[in-house]
Length: 212
Figure 1: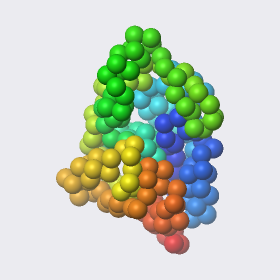
Figure 2: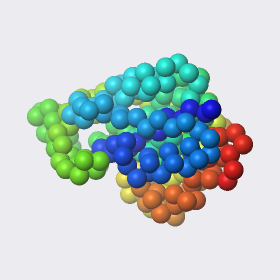
Figure 3: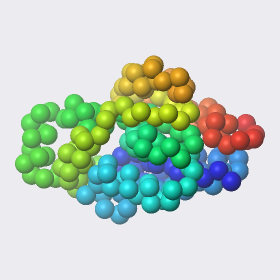
Figure 4: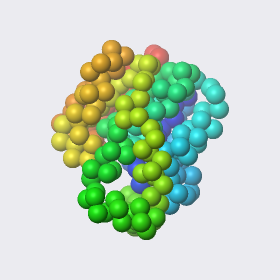
């Protein structure tokens, strides 16, 4: 049975609509899906390094395939580039260049204040409330490459109207990698209106013999 790790987006969680939707679809196709809690109950001290370590612990050195959304898509690419036992990766609006995107989305003064204070409040979509987030996330993320050198077969879906992570980032990633297939869809960052379009394609990509 194909093991699949699902990686949710930033300030989301294992009970997100997309996570539960893809678990149901992929398990119906014969996969075994594990939805990780990437914050491990400690959102305030979140780091890229910590999330990659959590993924490594969950995978336990076994062959796995990955489905990642937004920041989870970027984490999937980082992990796959460092773990050849990863079989395949399906990325949904992956947040390539996560640290750079964050810095660009905030005014320089806001980044400076975040650094000075050590934390800021952000809206946590999974919990529906404001949560404190430490500056260590941005500091740690800056140590990682924008575009990981993924060698495994990779399928990417990105919304043409994504105003959080520009679709051009996925186009840049896919342009020089023959192992990557990219589909730009008429959607925004959350891709919720195209779940039924993506599901059978991801199932066919990740699961041998899946009925689509």
